[in-house]
Length: 120
Image (cartoon, rainbow, N blue to C red; front, side, top):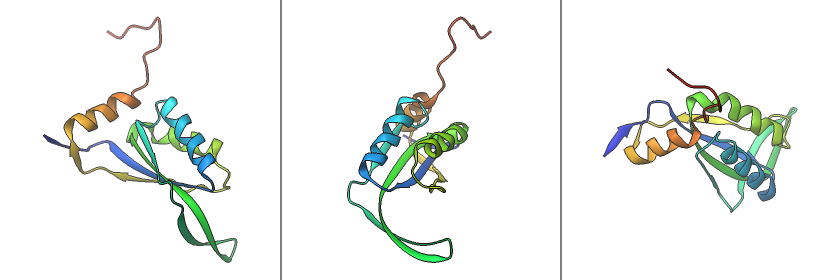
């Protein structure tokens, strides 16, 4: 059954190396900031302008699944671990998807409850 994505997001991040991509992927999934991160193992060729100069680089693309609520923390963690001064981080809304999958994404990135605190 298909459900509307609502608050679910796909986040794209490029990295300078496979090692950096893997480090970021482990950290954001381990920290419950993303439910899943796919690493495109073949480099992509990026063309861009940086400090007024046309550049070309081989980069590794991360495809992250998360929620809008976790984007701010995800961005901070990517910036903390990333080697670039201005890392790419683009969040795209998910219009629709498999209900079970999107529910799993929601559950995977939900912040765990603090011990000793009960919600009424």
